[in-house]
Length: 76
Image 1 (cartoon, helix red, strand yellow):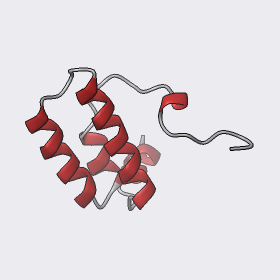
Image 2 (spheres, helix red, strand yellow):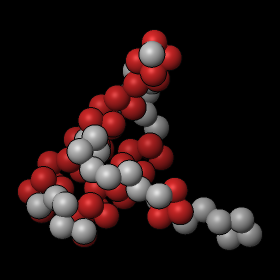
Image 3 (cartoon, one colour):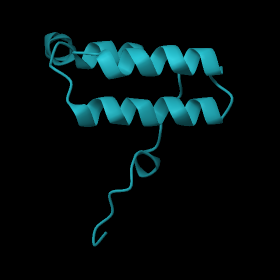
Image 4 (cartoon, helix red, strand yellow):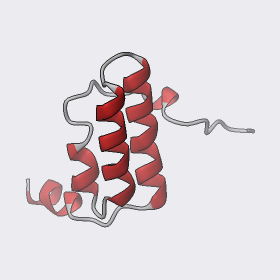
């Protein structure tokens, strides 16, 4: 458990913040978040400093399958 706690304290990268924003946009598109909630959470995601802060923004949302979280495909 200490490994998980230390991971949440790691600094978030721009890519980490972008992934959370994608998850939030998807959740809003599915009707899971209101526009107000989306705006609040996106603002928080863009100013998050740690992975733990980002995790708090999506803890009440269902997990997103890896294939729908970005467009990385071999051979692009």
